[in-house]
Image (tube, rainbow, N blue to C red; front, side, top):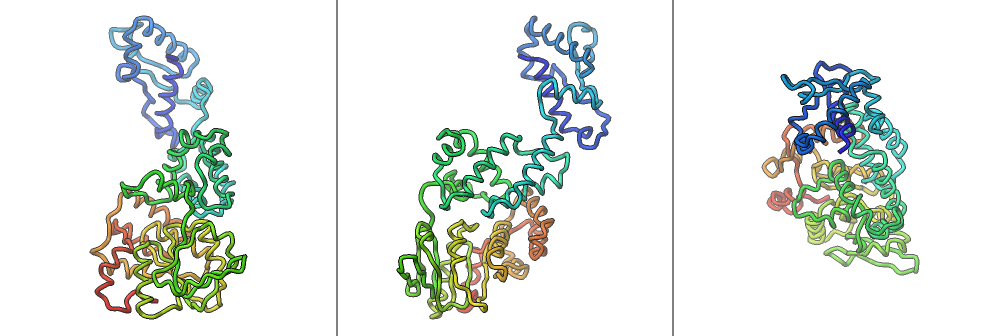
Length: 423
């Protein structure tokens, strides 16, 4: 064992968690107690290991990096505790000795790289990830514990850039790995877990225990099969080859493979309304309500969460009259609010539907409790000006520690009359 490296890294880890690091002031010593360190015990029980350890500590003391105290009645034999000399010169020497980048320097470099990437991604989830990490760094300042080092960040950004630049919504994992790392398995071995951890912490609400790694990867644009577009209403899809698909007669909605979107020229129809719906159950419920009422004047579109690149292309192909009323109906939770923000970037006139404090309050008995970590995310969104229109909703989520999933609304809406929930 390299005792100097092990000891200094342990002391620097503790230093970076201390008030001395955060504020520049601190009365408590940054300590290492050999007798309490389990990893050291096998080496300290060996006579030669014990002597090598003593020589390492004494050498570090001679350089002014650490100091120590002998165990009572064991002077020259057993060290009771070792502490980092708490001045800037000694701390700088410790970092240099172990060839370690100081945390404050790492924090600054990471923020600089992330700031340069801000605004570069068109995929909403990727941009949201960058913004969320930068916001956390800004809030916590020196308390911020970066989720990656500089090399790790550059690998993550390389993957996101590759995905961003692909013409298809879903990219094959092995092809991605070869293109970015020249190794078909590097992504899965070294990046996949970190990437899913970041998106799970900062972007998606992957709370369902049955959600698989494959499903999570699909959410960020990695998989095998192309996605599907679900829509219904008085809609005609015009393709580049002259073919026209009239979805008006499909009362249960129409499913189009995303592979056809690249051939889509425009979308027309006699609809005067557009509603996007986050969850599949509510999408089909709304379709059937429209069909039962004999209405075809509304284009109904299922988002399945955040919009993919091809879903955005589909929506941008709509020939929109000035009078087109556009709404989004989603969960009253952080994901639902984020999807609305994404849609408003496409349709500035988009309005939330059943996503206000009145709806949240109305279905009080159907709400779902959330964790403290979730509430911390809600607190961060309160600071984001883009979500200012949902300030009161976010405050209610934080105050009640609950969210409202839109499927839960259906259990009550069914008893509220035939026209309930209709645009």
